[in-house]
Image (cartoon, rainbow, N blue to C red):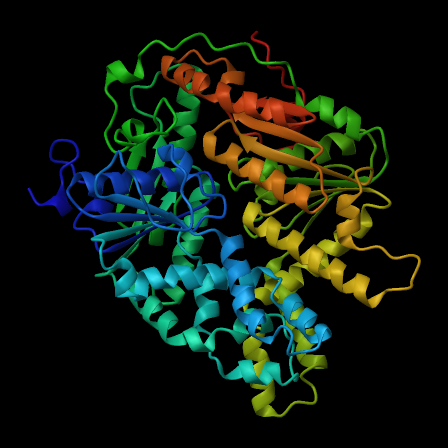
Length: 600
């Protein structure tokens, strides 16, 4: 049997594992199981006798937790799996090293003011992306790095917008350094030119299906499937084709026929049938939901193999009784005031839009003036609300519209006195993804200011985008503080976010390993910025739904460890049961806040 075509169950071969190329990338919405699928793939290839390097480019990587070892920024062999090594690219370490390579040679040579200016230019999110990509590209373009390995498996591929940034022509870098244009990306882009050949080689590898396979991972949920559809279109635009789809976590056919299980199965079927024709044409594999968490080699080895009826129907231990913690308790405390900023943060796919909408509706029903807005590019608010709500104003920070407005303003101001070549270079600069962050942050700041006189509930983008937003707040704060020295009264968005009386940050998670780990990492990042989360919400808990299905009871038991971690971490906690029907529309969203966890 050829090791690159190892049969998994009978005559069944997973399409994305059939004759795999050297590089395999796994990308998709947060919480869909990219890490589990990537780790299981690496194990599969190693078991087939291949030498494999598993690389995580995820800022909230939990590859080390999956294998029970400490992994860092150096290649680490997994002793329990011959042939398998791992590497985690730490974005913050990479960014710090990148900054030092640029600033170190000029420190002491240039005036402190200029060094401070360079440091500020290198403090944004683009620098972190480029720094991480420096390490990432070496794995694609440097034979000395990847040469010893038959396969390199990436957990979380770079996004299309990062690749577009690297493909931008370099001619405008000198133009920006001469001080003629807007410098939203000056810092990171200043270091691109000397790496351009390496980047070109890496992008060439990504575009070659014989060398690279992109695997788009999703759960059987409309939002997750919409995310990989968007990613697929974005990758095609930059010439990356030959993608595969993996729909992970589909309920096994034999997992039960009680009302809850059947309702969940119907929702999954409807979501899969709703995918676009373009996505439906891509080779697709379906992986079953497992009863236990995918942690450890033994568990990962089962991910690609359908469970037997005995596995699914194995009697689970009794689920411990959870504390009764309805969302209404949090709403009651919020409603004591008449204004404030409520930010719902968390990993993609955990239900931030649903929780934000439920809170906003309840506050509006109590006569509060409420603005519900989203910074999420996916913008699921309209679908969730399914109509207008009395007393509730709904708005969306549209990244496309905000970015175009920003570009037009910059071209009309900074570009008005430039010649044709200068305007062309400035227009090229404004195509950078950094421009979108700057533009969106301007509208975000306006929403923050409205919370002084009313409630503003913000459904934020997935965690990575949110942290970029908060990073922009910090950069803006530092710039304002420098410019406003001597003024006794000033206020920046970061000050509002740090004001516990004004801002209530609610961290949303699922009772699963990866979402909780990322939520804990998010809380750590917020604390470093002087922002303390006000409460946590555990959403869609199987344990809280008291299922009849033996399979779901096994899932419920697996949740308890994660729920206990949240209870030991948070000041306040609400736990929301997994529901048979989606909480959409005003009536269901309002009812969501009053759900009790005690069995009926």
